[in-house]
Length: 161
Image 1 (spheres, rainbow, N blue to C red):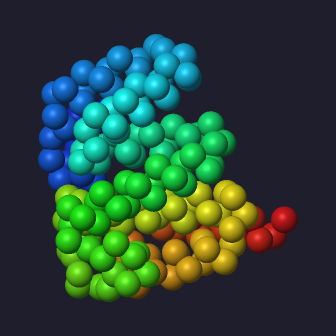
Image 2: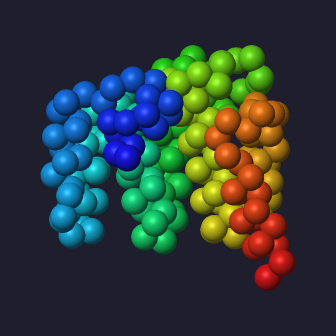
Image 3: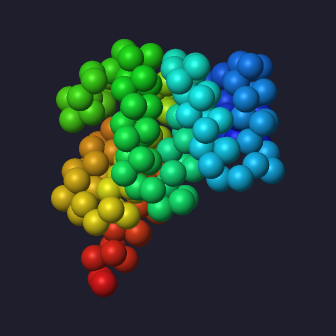
């Protein structure tokens, strides 16, 4: 299913993606990696308050092993989502009850992006950072709406190497 137009989009982002953003994203289909990166960056810069392109861009970089770039984009996405969800700009200061992370919208996207940062930290070998992020995620999402088990399994696996 298309993340930007299907159930996943509504569950994660809390609404429809603007048609102009969809048109830009559609231009990435069948393109080379450099063109995809250029279109995604153009979309993020052209629509800086639209959350889905940030997700696509940090996932794109992470999938290519460009973890520094992925971390940078995810950090920007976290800041944009924090503003939209009226959360503290410092993720360490966010507390349970600051937002309802179980409902679609910027708060849930913020939580999902925090998970992405934990995943990226594990892949970068930043174990202490990953552990701190995971602990925060467990406090904010005790019922695990965002699937933190995958990150914890990756962390456990990386610790056994």
